[in-house]
Length: 233
Image 1 (tube, rainbow, N blue to C red):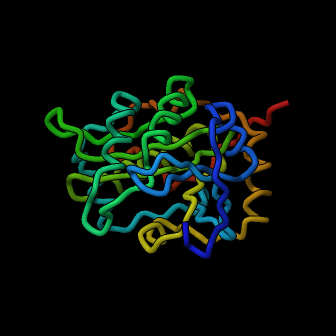
Image 2: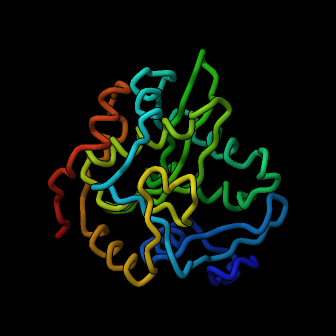
Image 3: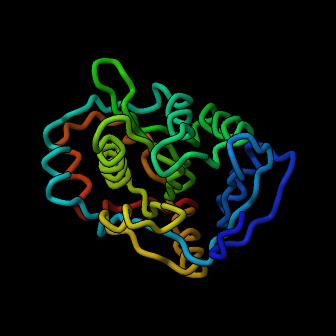
């Protein structure tokens, strides 16, 4: 890792429990490259955060989502979504998603901590995203598209379900121009850790991640005020 924006430390031999502890402490894992078996813990100086109370959907995308171009499913093809995110694409010839990363997130998925939002058309997976949930925080990991706007539609549906379920933090990890269009803000790590601490005390309704929503319902939910949350004891 050479990006000056973050520090990274190499780690070996940790499991799903260790990975959850990393998220709870404000760090996350990445690989160097697809064929490099090493995994690093990353703590950026600044985080990309999508404020759920100020989530933005560009006008054209609102029309697209409301048109229900895809069949939206959750957790029906988690490993396939991760594989899609790891594939080469224009401008992204290599990937940080290596074999150990894929194995770790498969473990988290089996334990109910990692989820995929999927876009299907004619029974073909055409895009989606995956991430990790812990308390009232959702950590977005990666997304992919095989058809126009598929990953963007998946993100809107994710935000809608997070709002309905009472999540309070949507962590995008790194700030990008793409995410700015959804209202993402660059947040110093110190401020992010305060947001994370508060979010970890929240108990969202995880059943609402799988809520059946039309495109119109998803847009409405993604843009509505946050729902009251339940603090864990």
